Length: 293
Image (cartoon, rainbow, N blue to C red; front, top):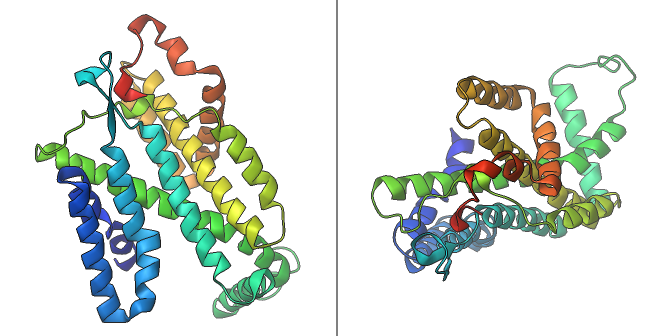
C-alpha cells in the first residue's frame, strides 16, 4: 500500500485548492513540507515541493482559472482540460529532469548504476545467462533500462497527478464546492504546437546524456497526453451507441493489461489533432461549449 498512498498524498492539497482557495492549497503545501523537514530533515523538503506539493498547488490553481466571455457558459471560459494535461506533463518532466541533473557522476554513472541494478535483479532471481533465449548482456539491458526509466517515472507521476486532480474535482463536485462547471472531458484537445514540442523532445532524446534522458521523459509524457486524447476520441465517437460500455470497458482493460493499446490511442490522438475527427462526426450536434475546449 505504500506506493498508492505515496502517489495519492497530494490529493488533500488539490482538494484544498479546488474546493476552497489557492491560499488553502499553499498553506497545505507549507504545512506538509514543514512536517517532512522536521521529521526527516531538510533534504526531504525540496523533493516534496518539486515532485508532489508544488504540482498539486499548480494544477489546482490552474484548474480554477477563468476569464470573462459573454458567449461562454455562465459568462466565463475556464482553463481548458488539455492545458491541465500539459501542465501535469511539464511538472512530471521537470521533477525527473531535476532528479537526473542532481545525480552525481553524470550519465556514465547513471548508466553504470542501471547495469548494476539489472545484474542484481537477474542474480536475485537465479536467472542464468542465456535464459532469455540469447546471450545475456547486462550492459545492453542496462542502457535500454537507463533510457526507459525516466519516461516510465515521468508518465507514472503525470498519471498520478491527473488522477489526484480528477478525484479532488469529483470530491468538490459531490460536496457542492466546485465553482467551475464540470467539463466534457471527452472533448478536450491538445494545442497544435504540442506535436512540434514532441518532435523536438524525441530528437533530443537520442543524445546519450542527461539532457537526452530528460528529453525522453518529456517525450513520454507528451505521448501519454496524446494517448489520453485518443481515449477521449473513443469516448466521444461512441456516445449514444448501445455497445458503448462494452467497447470502452474492453479498451481500458486491454490497455491496462497489455499496454500496447496506449500507443495506438496516442496515434489516434495525434491524428485527431490534425484532422479533428470529433468535430467532423459531431457536426450535426453543434459546436462544443467554450468551457469544454
